[in-house]
Amino acid sequence: MSSPFRKATSMGELEVEKHANYILSVEKKKDDFESVVMEHLRINGAYWGLTTLDLLGKIDEVNSEEVVSWVMKCQHESDIAGLQNDDGSFSGDMWGEVDTRFSYIAICSLALLHHLNKINVDKAVKYIVSCKNLDGGFGCTPGAESHAGQIFCCVGALAITGSLHHIDKNLLGWWLCERQVKSGGLNGRPEKLPDVCYSWWVLSSLIIIDRVHWIDKEKLVKYILDCQDKEKGGISDRPDDAVDVFHTYFGVAGLSLLEYPGLKAIDPAYALPVDVVNRIFFGR
Ligand code: 3PZ
Ligand code: ZN
Image 1: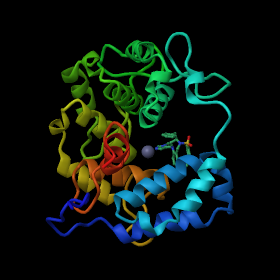
Image 2: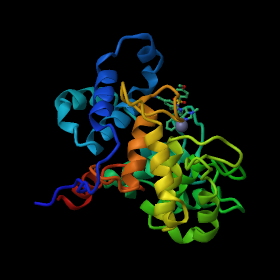
Image 3: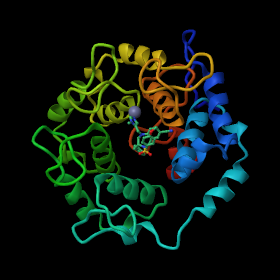
Image 4: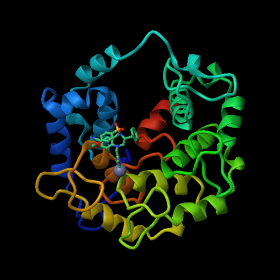
């Protein structure tokens, strides 16, 4: 049996134990103020926290029966396919806000469920392509400014549907690699500060279009490691800021894309560990 974990070739600086304990501690204190404010984010938080633990090799620390029964309580009557609009776009919910983020979530989720046939994929792809800009990037609606988070959603959805021929890889690769700043970190738009979460949005897109060699990977690894709270665990957006589950996940996921030793590999389009994706699609 081959292990899904990469063999450690050098002594890592990633505080694996501390980050796992940080995630587990956030999961336990559900009733304090911060958790109440973040209530609507609980399902996102569960995904960020659980995926982080899995990448770190610590998923056995959670009780999966408890998690599954809680997730099941979040399911609504409606389903995803009913949120597709006539122009191929997707609304986030019944109130109707339209955004390419929702196109990605719909396409990714239905692919994982083996139910892509329940939507009009051609129209969904056409809508995403209509959000492409002259700089090679993508926005949230047609004509909206390019943004790295939106680019991930559009590139990821095009990858899942086998539609990457709609992308000018050199033009988009250029825009994406320009996101790396002096410190080694990545920003989401020109003139903005670097932020650990863009390690994910930018890097995953660069990998999908096969242009990741256009950035300095070693400097980015160092930037992410510099954003760790080495005492209490967790990763922040920038060095010395407060940590949160979101940036801890995207930091660890970014390091996984950068092939940091000791971490499970993550799939850049599905944003799930590669072994999980293989289990879903190939049953192994
Ligand atoms: C953060 N959300 O709108 S949010 C999010 N941001 O719900 C969660 N990088 O103030 C956490 N910025 C922290 N734990 C931040 C999720 C945002 C992204 C804000 C952020 C991240 C820089 C300013 C939008 C998937 C889902 C949601 C988003 C992006 C991707 C905030 C501010 C906003 C939000 C939550 C908390 C701390 C955590
Ligand atoms: Zn961020």
